[in-house]
Amino acid sequence: MQAPSITVTDLACRRGDRVLFAGLSFALAAGAALQVVGTNGIGKSSLLRIVAGLAPAFAGTVAVAGGVGLLDERPALDPALPLGRALAFWDALDGAGDMQLQRLGLAGLLDVPVRYLSTGQKKRAALARLLGQRAPVWLLDEPLNGLDGHAAALAEALTAEHCAAGGIAVIASHQPFRLPALATLALAEHAA
Amino acid sequence: MSRAIALLRRDLARLLLGGRGGGALLPVLFFLCVAMLYPFAVGPDAPLLAKTGGGVIWVAALLAAILPLDRLVEPDIEQGLFDQWALRGISEELVIAVRVLAHWISFGPPLMLAALPAAALLGLDGRALRIVEIGLLAGTPGLAALGVTVAALTAGLRGGAALGGLLVIPMAVPVLIFGAGSLGTGGTSGLALTAAASLVLLAIAPFAGGAAVRAARG
Image (cartoon, rainbow over all chains, first blue to last red; front, side, top):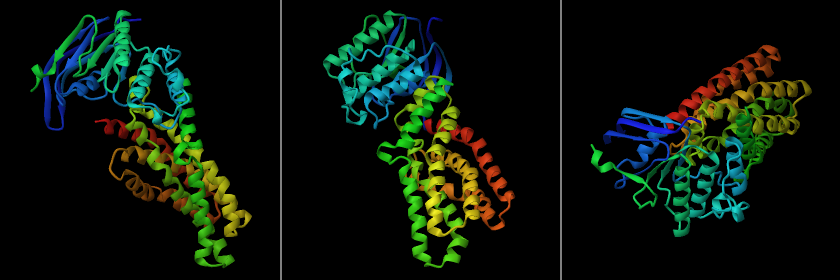
């Protein structure tokens, strides 16, 4: 497998008629982790969506090598289905990745419809979906929202393992995220 | 290919078997209700019912096709599934094409079955019933394609479901005219034109729907 990388050059983002940030450049190689920090509305989520290729860049270029996994506030699991079947759909698409359900504390919830899960449980389920995807590039948008202390530590541990195995993680969060060798990008310095 | 099958299985589980949306049952019951109400409204005039019944079945089928519009595309955009598919290199066109197939399976054949009791209620003879059934077979794929396309176009809009219904009706007119019109002429040309209108809609749907989903992403 080709080593994953992200190269962002002179990137600018526009929402509506407002330019959120401009002149943003960074490069991440295999094993690197970057936390994007900044106040609400500064463009953290927009940056992740541009890197994911889901939103167009206003200016500049983004080059990503390797499959991209995105974790945001939407778990992308059918609300009406039991958790086990909702995850099985992604398993069928992605192939047999280990979702680590036991470790995420989801093994006992597989019969519960997704809409009955709490915010934190949905977040953990989305983490399981992300693990099953086995994408080398992780884009995590507010990954700790809704997670209790134990689950937050688990999310940090999973991200650390992902990076140790040669993956890349970009974390957009205003909360502190504990990770060895975590670089920080302050979007406020690039605000237009 | 296995991805298309996984998508189809999920779509069928959602659209055919239903969950909270009522699945395929709701449009069929709606269709039968219209067919049942019509004789009450116009009175027990058997020749009149037999003459106009085929057209009523077509109008009922068209209205029944509109019912599931709001759950065809919008929930998947809202819950981020289209984004996750895009990340996996699954194109919006493929998802929409699969959804057209699943939507048709969940309302086309059930409506054709329900047309049997409806035809009995309206006193249609065997010849008219045969033309209605062949017409529905030719026309419902087009209605399914149109429904999914319009659902993708109106996803995320306020009042999108009502707007979707209003958009589907004028665009479904060709299918309706040829499908119901073939009852009057009895010829195969009307049925062939129904199928032709259907094929045009089927050919456009994945591209128009895919573009609409991408545009909604913004």
